[in-house]
Image (cartoon, rainbow, N blue to C red; front, side, top):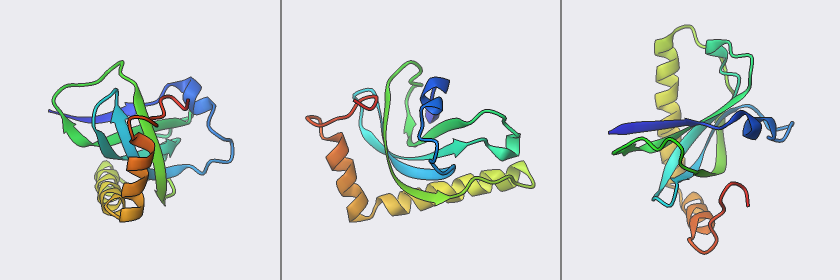
Length: 131
């Protein structure tokens, strides 16, 4: 089984709005034509790793039977958890990631966010790659 984290290509990251706040977000994600799952994502420079290039990493909160390299990942961001920051240790970073995942799961159980899942991932209205 795979826990999936997917990085968006550089050209996607470069085309994000300049005023988009970096940090940890949550929402819904779908791989290809598969089921829609909860997701949490990081947008920014990942200060713990001292990255010099902004990245967008999405973690789908689901255990997949196989990897999905090369598939289309469709997402809808519905909320913000916290700003990005550095950590004193890898263990502290991992603890924060687990906390972010729990926060996302709890928020996405709220009726107003479940409605957004249905709205944006209804098969007749499904948005792929921003189109």
